[in-house]
Image 1: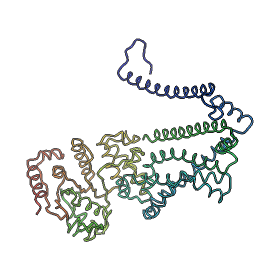
Image 2: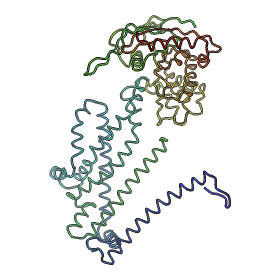
Image 3: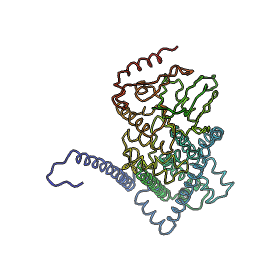
Length: 271
Length: 258
């Protein structure tokens, strides 16, 4: 918003200005905090307050990252983890949408399956990983299954709960207008659950990443999870910490992408 | 107003709700007729089974006892086409106003040009034409109810059922909107059954009022409303000299159990 010099701001302009200033302030503090952390880390390593062999340092991380890019295949490790995570995530979305739809259609089925879902959801999925290795061998298949296993049950439960929370009167409305149960699902339940579908997706992509890293720890020759385990075994902690930082960035990008998609959908449907 | 014939006749309707704790009798021996073009209000204490009765008439519930008879002018036993208006407008925010009002046609796979022309005409008549591409949240409370009415009328029902409509609106808006919607339904030449717990609303809108008792609900009284009116608006009805008498009579019925 442009204001002519010397002209007094209106209350509205003042409000907008304050609002923007607040957001800038938050963003600046976030950056400052991050930079301070990096400086403190670097300085403590240089002054030998911490042993950079164990704790690394920003410069060593950067060096390691560049070296990995040059000599080893950092990019291919990142690519493998990204691919496996996205693939698991899409399968989780697909499966849980299918299953929760079935559960919504058949109240009986949902009643029968409820305790199983609750138990499977509470089960630490890392406990299953060794089984997956025996059943499926070491490789991409096992890792994707591990990724799916972490997110799927919670996702089914969230979707189904979302479907159930749709206003019953809206469903009655569809019936009074001569619609079927199928119409009720596609015209009311599904479009009415979009916000819950999106927020669940945001959680799921993180969970899929968790599952994939667990899988890579145990059953991979490639990927960031493998790099972390390998690095710790050969005591190259720079490599471990670099991989962890790359994971942080990936998680951030995933989260932001879904947030952007969510925002776009909200604009499109004016929600 | 000359009523030709009964569009609907309820004979000894009974209905109970069942739970593990036992049976709750909701409706008992309910009988009354509805003439074509008539406006009927059903009043009764809250929880007496008014909505149950409306759901039975709408065909959403099957009565346990009794029958619903239909006498069509041509002698056939075709159940009248019924439009049901719920307590809230339930316009879907993810659809435009136009796609909301055509929802019924869409569900019945009946998006013919003829029907859509009717919808267009209604949108124009009800002043919603310029809002057709807007979202429901951009409409006022009254306009939302008008849109809900178009959605119902698009299917060309003979009989409209209103289950405590407008009850989500604040008092002033409600006075205006209920008068407005009922005027539009009369103008469209439809028959209407409205459920309400507001006696003033019943007197001002209906030709006949059916008073139900508490549970199990029986028909306690039937009151034909004849008001001396300056004009035909429901707001004017509240100023009619007989209004207070009707009100007192209904109040007696409602408060004195047997």
